[in-house]
Image (tube, rainbow, N blue to C red; front, side, top):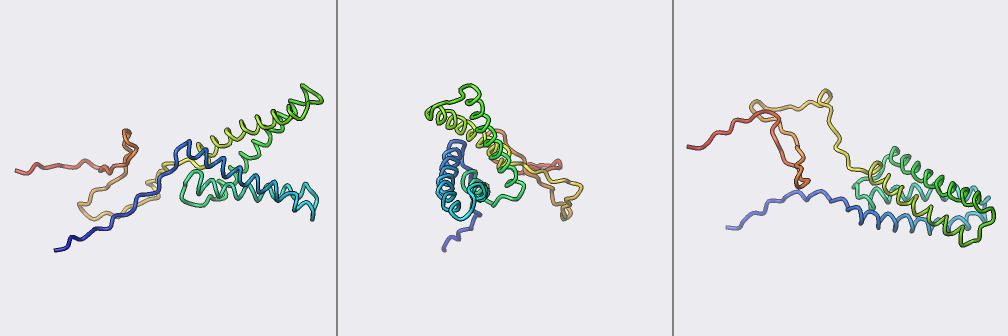
Length: 189
């Protein structure tokens, strides 16, 4: 007699850890940044530089948000418009931080050398990037336990069928099924 193999559903893809996500964040952001830096001068040949920079910045931010959702943070789905707007907001905040750092440099030293400019800009960019990574990981693409509103969600149960719900286990992070109603357990004689 041949044993029959029962097909088990494949487990949900696991989300990458913080270090892996950060490396992916740097690779995606850096890659899109390099592509953007090549695209702006090419577009600027056909239109004003400010317009070319704005178009490439918007396209790069949209592309990065898609990559961060699917690859960096492993959400398993494309981002919705809310996540696109939140990600754009974090990019704008990073832009403001680097701009403020450069204004501060010029306030302290009216004519800094190129080494100081690069040092301040790259330091501010690095810190803004870490801040943006944290915002995206902890808020924009965070795994949320969305609660189902019981008033709008109705379950059809057969008579005698227990109502079950998922309960997070604190030790392992796995989920277990627990009854929502008391269950009578009888011992076999």
